[in-house]
Amino acid sequence: MKLLIAIVQDKDANRLSNQFIDHDIRATRLSTTGGFLKSGNTTFMIGLEDERVDEVLNMIKEASHTRQQFMTPPVNLDAQLDSTSAYPVEVQVGGATVFVMPVEQFHQF
Image (cartoon, rainbow, N blue to C red; front, side, top):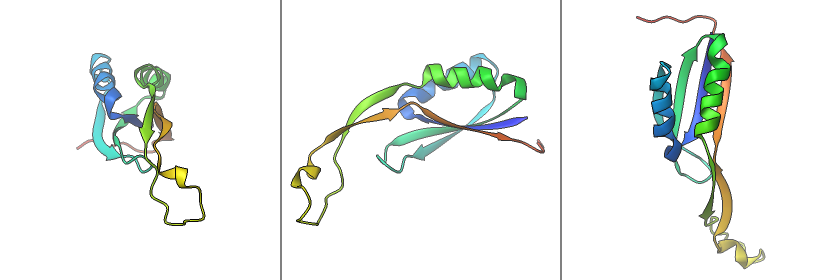
């Protein structure tokens, strides 16, 4: 048995959740916030048999897309550094981050 922790962008979460329902995959959905862009994410915790891991990883890969987004870097108070750092910069966001961990025991009460 494995535990998958999948962190996806909010824009992809509903599509992925619907795929989980269609394929009878039980997942716990948590609202989370990313540290870098402070943007909304969704974290899915999924417990499943070893044989289904590749199937779920493919679902996550197909549903999670990268996007370009503009962000404004934090204000730098050091006057010696380049002042252009206050302008918005384009960064790539999205996709998915997935952790696959072994489960020694599973209990459902």
